[in-house]
Structures are given as structure tokens and as C-alpha cells.
Image (cartoon, rainbow, N blue to C red; front, side, top):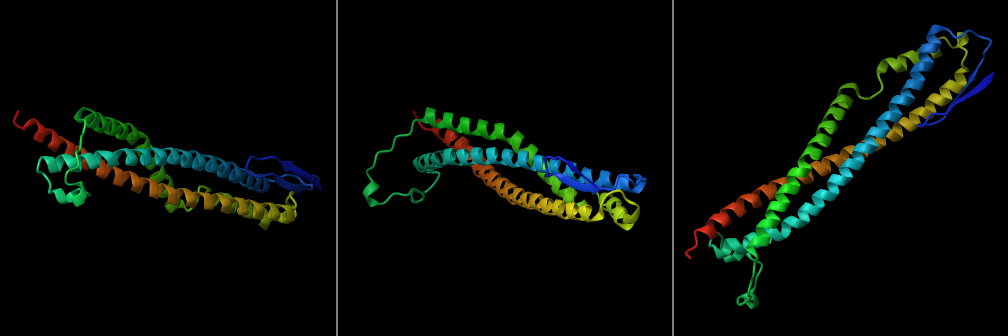
Length: 231
């Protein structure tokens, strides 16, 4: 028996072979399936990691835009009360604040609204791209249950069924398959983490988009109200 180690970025593949036996077609196909499973799983792990990192960037941008939206919403509350669009009760003031002087630089306010709107538009393309990949990936998983085609497992099982004629030592193949399945399970766990993170990011974006669009419309109404004030 000769031990052959195939270094693979996912995990080392270690098998023993009886090289006195010929390599038959069923075994060649089965071993190719075993190696291909490693290739596909490594590639999927890299894709999941890349898209997880893209979600992290979106997470940062959503948090920043959420932070920038707060003062816009607060200024809108004040301007809407000034224009009698809303009742003063919307403002978080108490009796001590009745005589407080509030100054809003309208030029800076509308610059802030325009900047926020542009940032949200700039982010939309990346968000849409990540959402499309997310949906397509999990549609595929829902349909096939795995990125590994079922036929590959069948090809490997042919080696087990004909192990007496195989070059590969069936004990080492079984051990290597079990270790691969352990690694595969870890990648599935990462995929679950990616799914949960993605669902949270897309929900956060939808909420931000809803609040932002509402604020932009409010800013338009306020602008009209200010333009209609008597000189």
C-alpha cells in the first residue's frame, strides 16, 4: 500500500492505494467525484466569505446613514411645527424649553438631505447585487439542498460497492470521506450564519429606505411651506 497525500486548500486528502491493482473506470470516476466535492466546497466557502464581507460593508454604510438621518428627522419635526404642519407635542420639549431659541441653517439642512439621498442611491446598486446573489444561492439550496450534485455521492458509493476491485484502500477512503463531511458541515454552519446576517442586513436596509423616503417627502413639503411664507 502506498499513501498519497493530495494537498487541497479545503483540507489534505490522504488515501492509501494498492498500486498492483489496475485503476478501473468506476474507481476513477469515484475518486474524481471525491476530489470535485472538495473543489466545489472550497469554491463555495470562498464565495460565502466574499459575500459576507460585502454584507459587512453594507452594514457599516446602513449604520452610518441611519445615524445621519436622525438629525434630519429632528430638524424636520422642528420645521413642521414652525410651519404648523404638526402640533408642538411632537417635539421632546418640556415647560423649561418654552423660551428656547432654535436655529436651523436651511442651506446646511438641505445639503444634508441631498447628501443622504445620494449616499442611499449609491448604496442601492451594491445592495441589489448582494440581494440577488443571496436569493439565487438559497433558491439553489432549496431546490438541490447542496452545491454538491447527488450524482457525485453515487459515484463514490460505486467504489464502496466494488471495493475488492479498487486500488484505493476502502478504510482510508471511508475515513477521508467522514473527515470531509465534518468540514462540509462547518461550511454549512458558515452558510447558516451568512443567511441570518443577510436577512438582518436586508431588513435594516428596507427600514432605512422607508424612513429616508418619508423624510425626503417631508423635506419637500417643508420646502414648499417655506417658499409660501409671506416676505
